Image (tube, rainbow, N blue to C red; front, side, top):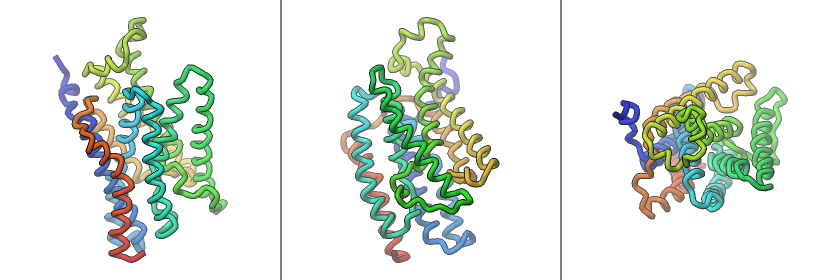
Length: 298
């Protein structure tokens, strides 16, 4: 008999995407509210703060979708290429906002997805290309280091690496992607209790088993909790290590509940919806920017 946890797995990949898109859009509205707020006591800033807290649910869900794509895609290289093309479209909008509105208008999480996905793809290869994983790893370290330097007491502004090229979640997102991806292997080991049979069972087939899906989801949720504890720990060590605004980022823990409810099925996936999914990010950013420009002026 299925457990209550397994019966609660009602969310398909379609609904995970919808929740991720909606919370991401709310987050970006919050970013623009912050840009146009006159002070932290401004109602625009307060509402923006709430919106940004809601928006923290989006990135863990996108990481979940990323690792699902890495595992299930017949051609992972082509899958990453599609993400890279989407990143290119987003960058066009992002660069326009950077130079026309505010350099701090927000980061681009798709850089995180492409870089982290590329690292996973390369590090899991069996040939010499495995060593190319050092390139995305270097990018993660560089992006994180520059953010730390700019937050430090040195008062540096590193213009040669503009914000639209940096990873929004840098090392935090990198560790999350690794944890989520290898949750499948860890779940497999736990389920088979390290017996030899684990090595002959394909993960794609195993994912059809609700008990295994529940275990993987739970491991991801635990990893998300541990990473948020790490964020708070770093913040207590030094304000310059508060790269992710811990008081806001902690709300990403709620994404763990949504991940636990994921059933591993793709769900609704018509071609129009796939096209819409790729077009949504650059389109909604441009639309939000236009609305705020009309309301408040550039």
